[in-house]
Image (cartoon, rainbow, N blue to C red):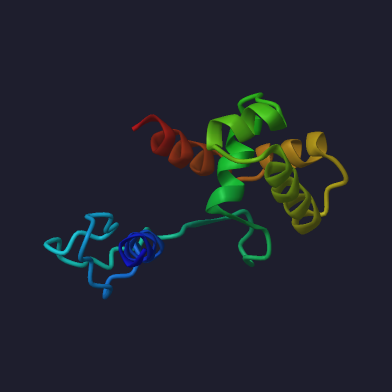
Length: 128
């Protein structure tokens, strides 16, 4: 009985870096790999000089795919998100840009002077 309890504990603690494993090799963090604290730099995309109209990286990804003509479901599939999450991002963006619907929002974004740089940077990001 104690053996199976130890196996269960090792399974539950497989993400703990300081837990001693005695029976299994379930460790998620191998002991011999050096710890690196490299975090991906989060980007934001500004659409105004004042900085009050901006998109986070995930919101920009959603808008990019919608500008390309994808639906909310197709955008969610491409980004490995739930369609509801994409709808939530779209709702926040519409509130921030003060646009009543998706069509007017995409038209507003396409008519800003920042649009070409925005599309070029995301095109490079998704096609590299």
